[in-house]
Amino acid sequence: MKIAILSRNPRLYSTRRLKEAAEERGHEVAIIDALKCYMDITSDRPAVYYWGEKLSGFDAIIPRIGASITHYGTAVLRQFEMMGVYPINESVAITRSRDKLRSLQLLSRKGIGLPTTGFAHSVNDTEHLIKLVGGTPLVVKLTEGTQGKGIVLAETKKAAESVIDAFHELDANFLVQEFIREAGGADIRCFVLGEKVVAAMMRQAKEGEFRSNLHRGGTARLIKLNKEERATAIAAAKTMGLNMAGVDILRSERGPLVMEVNSSPGLEGIEKATEKDIANMIVTFLEKNAKPYRTRTKGSRG
Ligand code: ADP
Image (cartoon, rainbow, N blue to C red; front, side, top):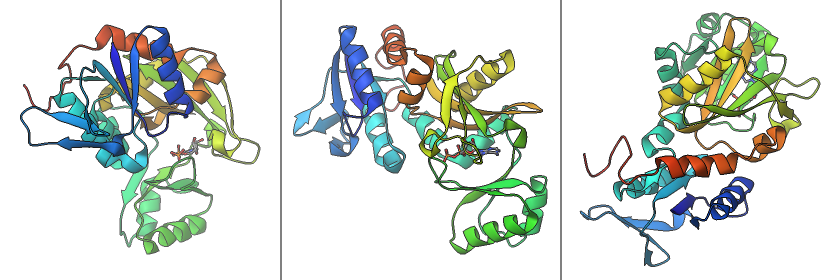
């Protein structure tokens, strides 16, 4: 097969591993920077150009589109879809998963366990918003935050009110969420591939910290999921329409609660914690599934 990896940096662990795994299995690989692609979107023969060259002959594409370039990156991916190239995750599903509000609404509609969450933009009734999620302690999260940077734990009503008011003042989009104390500063990352959880790790926050992000000093280890957790992770990925997803779950007294579904889950943390060759599994998945014009939300035909 000829496989494209849509990635801005060939040196990134995930990009490197995917290239390595695909080449080991005898495939041809090209790493393509979405921002360097240009397209004629009106032609009846959709094409993507890269450094003056028309790209052709690809069987499959692995999008690794950074959050900051979602809009243009998914447009490039859509163009590949219109050319009949099989994407491991479709542009529509990626766009959906990048919108936190939309994702949580979709998951909730399917009855998937979620922490009680309130969304707001310019409420003046802060007190009611706090009540809505069951009072304090609660977390306030910027919807555009990553690596645990835009999240604050408010233990008291006073603290919650000041944080919410401050976010309003900044005109930021945020959500207010029940704090799952019994998770004990740990969360579970489930790597879902084709309706199976192929690897799972537990990330534990360092002492005195509630955020388990590895970038914040959290540690990761292999974990065995129970049946309910496994089913929840698979259902969450399926609801988003993702073949490949990193589903983050909190263990709560009322069962697994989904925090986030990531459409470009990193390989480094999970491959190291579980010692599984996930890159190889991804390539094997493509070998089984990559057929021309197999996207469900077809661009040009059907
Ligand atoms: P980011 O997407 O920036 O990593 P998250 O929403 O994943 O932000 O939150 C970062 C970490 O904070 C999570 O990995 C988890 O450990 C902790 N956390 C987030 N939300 C909650 C919550 N509602 N209750 C308990 N812990 C939480």
